[in-house]
Amino acid sequence: MKTLLALLCLCAAGACPLAAQEPDAIGAGLLAGKPTGVTAKLWYGSMAVDTGVDFGHQLTLYGDYLWNNWKVLPQPAKGRLPVYMGVGMQVSPEEFGLRLVAGAAYMLPHNRLELFFDIVPVVRLSPGTSGGVNLSAGVRYYFKGI
Image (cartoon, rainbow, N blue to C red; front, side):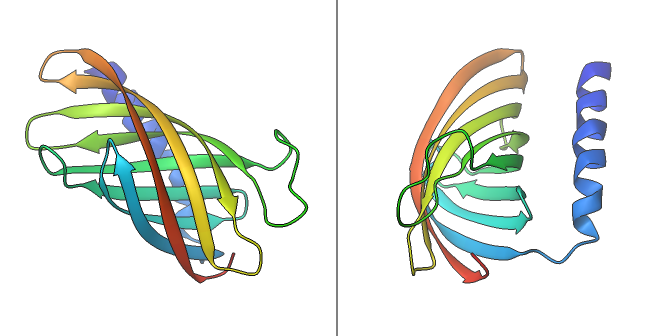
């Protein structure tokens, strides 16, 4: 339990500077796989906060703090191709877990659309301890920025 509390405090401390800033870009969209549902992403420079609701087997909420990098993969002639990693949490009526997020996105040129793919190892801490891997792909439309 102490480890869980320390991780929660670390995540909250890392996100606090973002709370004082106006997001550079705001997007919302759909994702399929595990989870399957709706997603939103708020960009703050090269950092982002990603949230979502999974309407699959049971209602699950998640939130991630992401670090984006445009130098890992060669950039296409048109559009942008960031790779990202992050940490987050997910909660449902039956479980609580920590998420380790890795993924890539493609921001279409001259468009407000982002296509993305995530691979997310999940460590479930309640009830009991177990693990799993979530895979999802989706699309977001950006209302502001990008």
